Image (cartoon, rainbow, N blue to C red; front, side):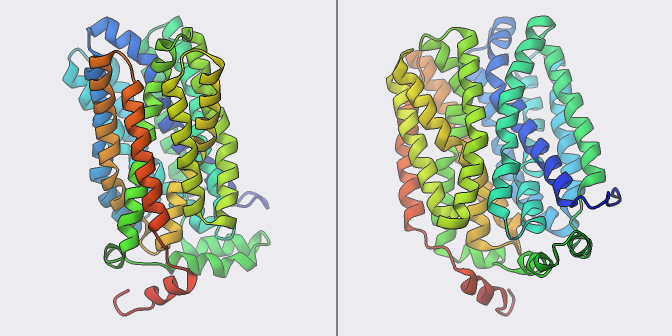
Length: 421
C-alpha cells in the first residue's frame, strides 16, 4: 500500500519527512517534554523524584525488543513495523490520563518505550541508507534533526496545554498526533529495491540506483559482527555516549531551575539545546562523510563531556550558558552519528539485527542513568554528582571508539561475499 509518485518530486523526500517526524516527535514527547510533566505528577500523586524517574528506567524494554524488531524489519520490512510501533506509542500516551497508581505510570511508560525501536532508529537507518546511499551522512543529519524539532516544539506545547487545560489533555494530544502519524507512515513508506531503483531512474538519479542496490546487500551478518572486536568497542562507545539521553537530557530542565533559573528560563534553555541540535546534526552528518562517523562521534562526545562538566559546576551565571552552548553543540550530532557509526562499521546487509543488538547494550544507559540520577538527587538534592559520573562514562566511551578500527569498503565487500555471509 503506497501513494503514487507525485510529479518529479523524489519519493525519498516525503519518506525522509515522515521519518523526521516519527523520530522527532517520539523523542520530543517522551524525553524533552518529560520535565514539563514532573511537577504536576509529583504534586498530584506525591511521588518522589526517584519514583518518577524510574519510569525512564523502563526504556530498557526498547533495548530488549530492539533485536527482535530489527530482525523483523529485515524480514518483513520497516513499514508495518513502523506503523504498529507508532500505535504503541500513541496508546501509551492516551492511557496515561487514566493512571491512579504508580504502577500504571510504569506500565504505560513501558508501552511508549516498546514502540521506540520501530519508530525511531530503525526507520531512520533503513530509509536513509536505501534512498540516499551517496549522501546518507548529511541526509541522516537532517532526518534525525527531527529529534531537536521535537525538543523545540513539544515542551512548549506540553507546557501550554498543561497551563491552559491539564497534564492529562497534554498526553491525549500527544497520543492523537502519534496515531495520525502512524497512518501516514503506512501509506508513505516504501523500501522495495525495484521501486527505489525505478524512482531513482525517473527522477534523474540513475547513477545512484546501482549504489543503492549494492548498499542494501553489502555488510556483515549478525554472526560475523559478533566475531569482530570492533562490534564490542563500538558498543561500549555508543552505550557510554547514550548516557546523555536519560542521564542528562531528561534532568536538565529541573537542574536548571534548581540552579537558579526561573521556570520559563529553564524551559527556554532546554529548547535552545534542542534548537542548536538541528544545526549540530547537519554539521556532524556532513562531517561524517569526510572524517568518518567514528571520528565525528568522538568529537561529539568530547564536547558533551566538557559541556556537562561546566553545567554541573556552574549555577545561574554566564558560565552556565557557556556549558549549555558547548553541550548543545556536541549533543545534537549524536542522534545522527549513532546510526552512521553502525552503518559505517558493519554495512546495511543486516543493519536491523546489528543495530538491535547495540540497543540491547544501551539498556545500561537507558535504565541505569535515570535510576542513578534519581537516587543521587534524592540523597543530595542536586544532579551535580550524577552529571560528574556521566562525564567519566563519556571519557570511557571516547577511549573505546578511539581503539575501534572499522572495516573499510573493500573489507566489508570481502565479508559480504564469504560463504554463509
